[in-house]
Amino acid sequence: MEKRSVILFPKSERLLEDMGENLKLARKRRKLSTEQVAQRANIARSTLWLVERGSPSVAIGIYVQVLFVLGLERDIAKLGADDELGHKLQDAKLLQSASSKPLRKRK
Image (cartoon, rainbow, N blue to C red):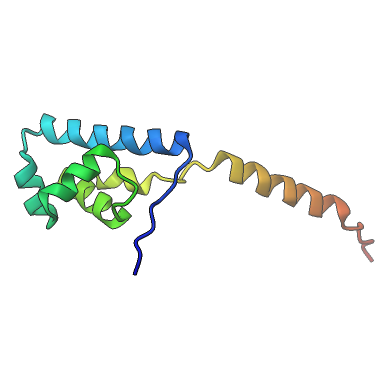
């Protein structure tokens, strides 16, 4: 079976690279070696190397596991928490549906 390569938008690519660099810096701040983090995350050092480079071919579960090992698992829970665009779209739809309904007369 042929393995397919993930093609990302340049902005997405930079985002992953920045995340990988942030994970590497977090590891170094904690004075943990690549061997220690890889062992605690139950991954190969080569996989950790890919994570720290922001590789899109690494499963998101591995990124989460590395975050957990570094004590940063709460960061993943923040994803999408403040969905400003989603709230605006939802509010616009609510306003639209409220204004399209005819008012009922009370008896």
